[in-house]
Length: 459
Image (cartoon, rainbow, N blue to C red; front, top):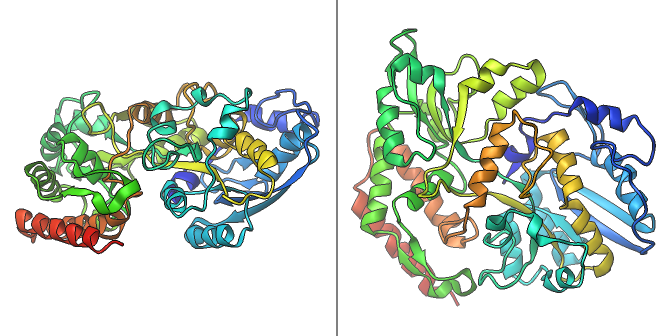
């Protein structure tokens, strides 16, 4: 589910390679002295979604990357020489089915996975609470993580917010990015630091058409019109105060739905109008292949990552592009939007809980997050991500957005949202793009009715 987040923009810094070629007791992420921490014994089975195990070459930059196996050899295995790791890498394409089977059969102790999967497994009773392990471990500081995603995310906390079952390890990057060059070509004022949907729509309209300087076709706006989690829709509901639902995932049957409210009407009115501005292929997440690059023709991209621009900078030191594409906050009142969080979790029936906790703590900690950032551009979940390079303004902006993030029921952890709401909104966007948008109130009334029937049919 977060495949794009994990695969995009891989790179490795020069000093990383120097460290890798150093002594056997040096951390591959920067020359930190690694020493034994414990003689604890045990075997821990680790199931990782998408992590690269072997050394290789990044396809985008041509730079070498250090696989997890070498990283573990030079870090964890020195720190915990008597803990045996059995590591399984699972492609994102079939990770939910595979990891679900491993949990049900008792074949995994620690898992790295998508946040929605983790939330569902917790509600199914397949994951272990971590509060007791955190409470008795003075070496673990939960305060190092961004509070918004450590304490307020369905990916890491129980539906009622009272239990900690996951530790956030990788953050999704979703921010608004605009092309300063196109704004200048059209004579449009730059976006504000926290642009709301009305500002974005107004300025995007002004830059849709023939560029007055180049004569080329420009598009004022882009977002992915078939997003599985409807992240742009979520940001709009926050911006317009359209809650959509009230209640808790702990008691899904009792959720009160508000999908046909006046505020939700405003959300769809925005989507209907905005759907005329992107390239036609946006309904299938196509048309923005050059965004962030020299030949870009899109003024504003929503829920963007900055990946293409940073990849060009890493491989070619192209500072001109870095200066050209500027990130700002998301569309919520405080600049928030939907924040993807991929956590580490522990199986309910983990065979060796103490050893599993040491592994989970290490793989979600500062050292491993630094390794993942430097080799694979994974966005950290730390308050003080001191290893993020000064020029990486996209990761820094993602951290700002995450810091004000919070979970709502318009979220992928909500089963009706994923099964019905997100597909319905994507269908509405597709119809709107072709000029055949359905009557908004009728569309929302129907969605409200479906939601109420869904809740009523729950046991």
